[in-house]
Length: 533
Image 1: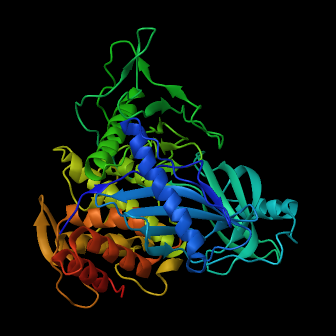
Image 2: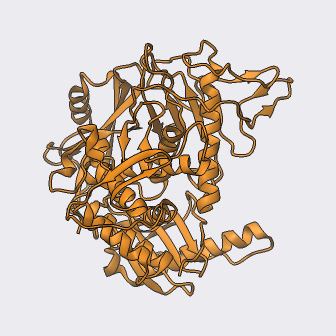
Image 3: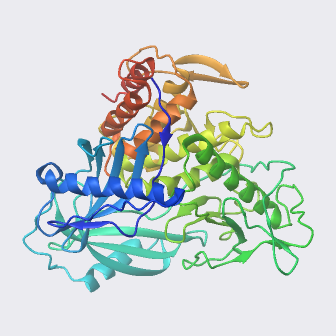
């Protein structure tokens, strides 16, 4: 039997527990807001108590501190409290976990990243920060120009073996003048390279941008009598980046769009009216916000009601879009200047906002199979924004970014048709670019939603094969996406791989529909069909 979910997750600055310390819950509840806060705080306090009481289960010991990141409370009172871990004050990458507990606070279970406990002989690095930063700058040459590096000492445990490391962020300009950054992780004892990955999450396109026709916009009338692209309902603002080529682009950069008569843009492709791209960006950000709130009860990217900053006209001839955690903003380019217009179509904007949701919840690492799952999450839920909007201009489909990249950038029924993406899991999937390893997750979603074989949906013909030759019967994309979202926000952690995603989605299907339900069986069958056992 399905059950509705009450999402109360927020990003938390407070709520820190160290080994041997336990915070007390707050019980004061004079009004509705404080009652919700009390329920949440009580859940946190009980989770902290469970960690202390079951220290061996969570690998919680001397020198460690826990920081609350997110809280989900189900309608039946079941609580899921997400923690990140530090050791001797240093962030532990791969040490996060979720405490699952009953309404009465008793421990129900846990979801762990790779690391289970941390104990290092020393937190004094042998490889110095200056040399590490210089090495990172050298490795970034040819990819990033005008680069600056910032090293941070961490405990790196993403592979399950904790070790001291330098995490060095190199920021500068990409090949089209867009803000770009890479992170280099280096063993702080031996100086050996561990891994590197992009700081931005991108959806790359080369096709024609499709505008959404004549639409209404939520704007704000300012004190000076002009209107601004400030959404008073959702809080996001839309700005012109003026094709800035600077890695310092932040929420305070650019120029807010204002207008005297509250009529924006001219509706043309390759428009010389710079507000035209802003119309689509502003409206599609709102539609994505509405999708998450109406479907999952999520109030914005971080579930705290905060709106993002949306930039259009970023870089010069930049045919791309990306989400940036650093400035809590979306950035969209103008295309290649000749054939590709602005990257502001609906599923692209949904894709980028979803990167922010992933960062605020499971924080799937943008590397290896976790990176593929990160991209698949944005493809899946970005596409579901399109199904939610159900626009006659942008008909819902399983073709990602088909409006800005005709006929499509990625497709779900057979991802390998793009010549790069994986249809099925294999031992080498984690070595692919994350935009290609995402094919396994995208294919699972199509099979779980629509099933295998040939069918025509909204005028488009799909033909989805299976690795094991099985026949899969779909449960519909509403159920499949609900299962994925719950798995993301409740069970997945930063190092979840495809086999872990199978476990997480089965747990989510059990929660929502029951362990003997057709939905549970379909989730399992779809994973087997993409060779994830």
